[in-house]
Length: 127
Image (cartoon, rainbow, N blue to C red; front, side):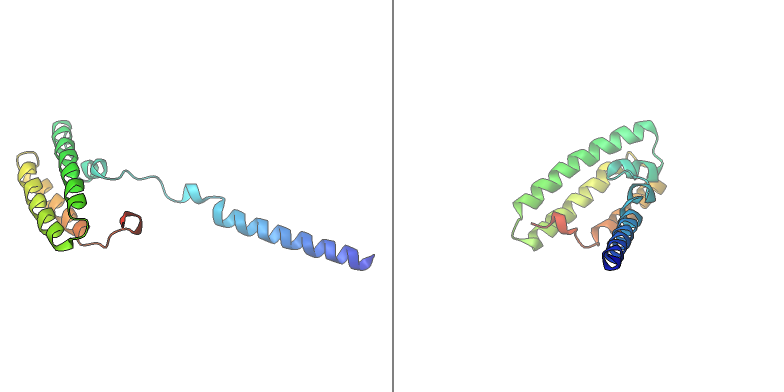
């Protein structure tokens, strides 16, 4: 009987420890980081665009994104050709943004684009 009570206490202790561990690991995961805007909407805030700039900027970025996806699909197996086309597309994007952004915003965008272009790809985006 004593041995049965000891086993029950042991199992209860293990159960409580596991429950506390799981709760501490996952219980507050959604409150740790606030959700941040992604993509062009995030850039609109960082560049501090006016409403008119925002509209034009988002239109340009949407069109250029569609072109990027076309280039990526076109060069599925040829990375060097894809890079050349993407570089040309980046230059086109910068030319389209010149009349929309002021010098400070354009410089900031270029710095962010350069940083973004040289990071390794995410695993889920690999084919």
